[in-house]
Length: 406
Image (cartoon, rainbow, N blue to C red):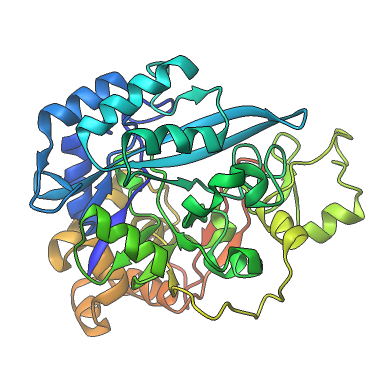
């Protein structure tokens, strides 16, 4: 198996960790069990310089390597443009096949925005024109619309998106063959729209800190080069995607974060889309938007699809079991102890047999891992920029005395 997370950011993007640099990414990719990372932020001059100086070409076209981890050249951009008198705001992930072509691409983009203001630059150019600019410099380059349901900056977003992909990309629509589902939706939700059947649905972390890489990812049958990846995505020929529970995403439900109002789509409709606290319109989330555009029942599937598996990251499992913050010292200590005893996080969550886990992991945490594997979790849904909260109910609570044993 070959695990890839294509969408991350560097330390040059807003609200990212200073550890989002190559050494930190490589270290955490090995903890997680990730084989390939998107570089992220290829449009930023300083990050591109670091990539150019450090990445080594592999024997596979379009794939680079640093520290034993493969990299593919990617970057997220924000397209802001007017369409039929309405301002649209769309995020797209750009995939480019060589450093030389990135250089040419960036030169052509400079007329549309300040590339060095942010690792994810704001470009005053239509999404279809961005694709044309990319194709002019790289015949193999392609675009994947990012987190396509996010309310504020996405293809189908409730606040600034479209109802149809053809509205956005027009004559260039046939050049789009994959879509990123985002943390707040999973493939099953996307299957409800038959017009998305021809697209591969991929999942990525959109990580802003190294420990978050791989919270969503894609599992391939084997290593690939850039051209092979295109064919794989066009034909949906990969093993599975790894998914957050979509309820945990920060835009799954509707609501107002400042007012503490979280609504299901049904509750939003009953309240006429108005927040009962401030009397302003609530932010319509992903589940609601999917239901608005769906033409299938929740239990229907397309003829051809890639399977998926929902997980909770290991540190979140530990934190939930111990009722501690993920960033706490005890959670981090136990996380690394488990990794050192058994192997990478993906191996533990997906592949390790239960006996191996039982022998090397404390009983309560082992029980938590098993429950996540079975999907036996409770989640308070995320809404309006607030992440959901995972709760793993064990057979019995951990006492303070038991916690000291860790």
